[in-house]
Length: 193
Image (tube, rainbow, N blue to C red):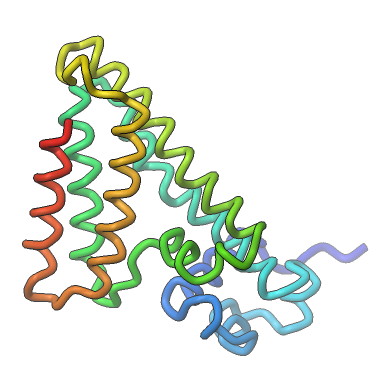
């Protein structure tokens, strides 16, 4: 049996960039051939289909965004960490001249309603961040930085939803207004804590 001549994770990373820029529907197999450097047959042999490669790209994106989840376990006060997380989102959006947004948000809007496998990957991504936020906000209760009447799970869901809203709104905002819009949302979200 011949060894693969490529690293599947590297191919998935390259494909992720293509899907992230173009979207699922607008990405052709030829775009993926050009973006990954592999032949059509190699792509099909390794990933079975365009959808299989897309799912692998979403898994790689999951790994890419792990730093945001890891941030929430730092020893700083809960509210400070939520602010840092939201500022990362603002800076990500401001630092992307192609306005790609979040690959998971894009997948949610474009494909999740029609594709159960993609919907499951999207849900896993959201739930991972929601769980980390809930644990952080429980700690916020314990340290006294979060009001005792605030429900950590509900707030975690609110923050995840806020982040995805920021990602989507940023894609459609005029560049000169983008930072102000995102910062307005960030400040209101923090007031909810």
